[in-house]
Image (tube, rainbow, N blue to C red; front, side):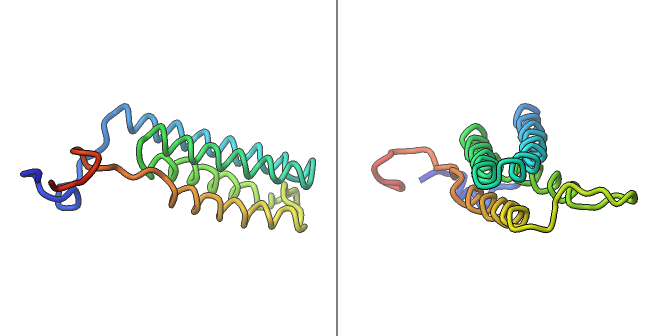
Length: 136
């Protein structure tokens, strides 16, 4: 057993500069994928919607693998959500990007569900030690 105790009992430390830069990059990529997906999903309705959701899922799962934890999936999901929420707001001139249609609602709800699923499936940190049995 490790003399440091449980990982949950350790004090929180700020992330390293490289990890913080990775999270910021994933956040920006998530915003770009959200903006691109909002344009694609309405352009080619059934295929574009699936492509937009697959792009978000790929980015979130890839971010989790790159960061080695769930934070790598949460950062692009947060960027996606911010971009999509900002794009749903109408402007004073009356312009808007999302129409009130089935595809737009499927994109919004499907994207949020995809983000939650990817953050849940993200890789957790495993404690070091023997791969067969822990604590032996």
